[in-house]
Image 1: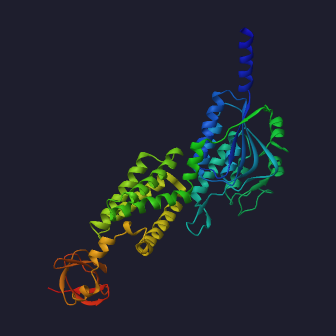
Image 2: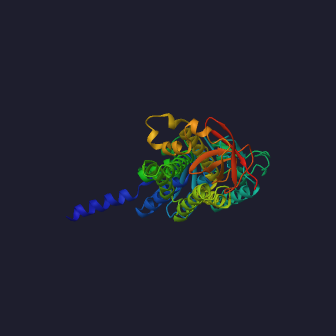
Image 3: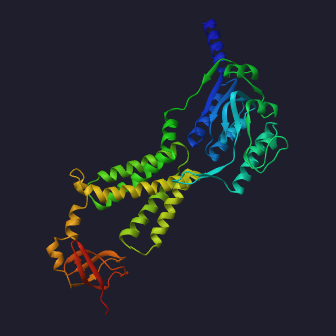
Amino acid sequence: MRKLLVILLLVASFAQARTYIIPIEGTIDGPLATFVEQSLDQAEREGASGVVFRVNTPGGRVDAAIRITDRILSSTVPTLAVVENAFSAGALISLAAQQIMMLPGSNIGAALPVTITPIVGNTNAADRKVISALKGKFRAVAEARNRPANIAEAMVDPEVEVRGITTRGEPLTLSARRAVELKVADAEVASLRAALEKAGFNTDTQELQPGPQVRVARFLTDPTIAAILLAVGVLGLILEFFTPGTFIPAIIGLTSLGLFFLGGYLAGLSSALSIILLFGGLLLVVFELFVTPGFGIPGLVGLGLIGASIYFTFGDEALQVGSFAIIGLALGLFFIFRYLPKGRVARPFVLSSAVEEVAPPKNELESLLGAIGKAITDLRPAGTAQFGDRRVDVVTLGEFIDRGQTVRVIQVEGPRVVVRKVDS
């Protein structure tokens, strides 16, 4: 029994002495930051001999990179970054490790923060305030690891010029050999195993991989996917408002919005405030459209609340997500009201009863010529007027007529009924 206990203790000790490998691949985002934080917690809890970050990333969100960097700096186990490519946010993460090893053909740097123009996709350098803040972070991390701070700053700010190394106007990017020469990295190695041996890490490794929660969060918080979910969610609620009782559009809309916030929640981005702001904004927009059309303030406040919700969830990517969502919503509305009424399958979900009520047969409309009635909505220039007990969709010749004003039918062209204001 005693021998078995000793063997178990030796096995446990050997397992705890392993080196943990944490891959940092693809775009740096909130879910990846959560994965790295959880992985470091596990490594420290299980007594890992060291942690290796295998870095191959084009960069990503600055806030996520700062979360990862701060967690690496506070780690109680030895850390090593093995770099294949560490651009932008990846460079900051690599600098936070106690040692850096460069693989053949690897690069590190090019950390100028940029903004992406929605739809067009053009990238532009961020304003000086953002560059200055990120430059300060690079300097602080480099100083914490005894690496050249001026080289770290030059990776961020193209205005920083290091004599004999950089030229003004371009952020610094270093090859593997150059990074070692400038003491940004510790060595150039041929493989991951060689990096472990060079750094003095145990070559018995255990690689950690993102779990289902992180993978789902990364998918749902992708700006394009998030924008589609937001657009479909809002579109579904609008359709349900027009076709009450079908429930299918509402179910689709609420499911999409649920997935939209689920991704943010799993990534640690969404909060109860974000959800409250979004639904509060939607209610105000609906109120603006159907209760006080043309007044403006509820709609503007509602749009502001929706924008704030998206910003609190997606930060720097909020403009991109919001723009794509608006485009998706506009295309969805166009498709529904332009094509779905003609489809047999979609006919139950379209305003067929409303259309039949508001647009009487052509011969009935012609009888309205010269009729006097009252505008029951603002005509800007289209709206609805009441003639006796009949509600009819009407338009003006360009003038705006307030609700409650008296109008006269001056022209009927098929389903088009033209009115003008009757002066008292």
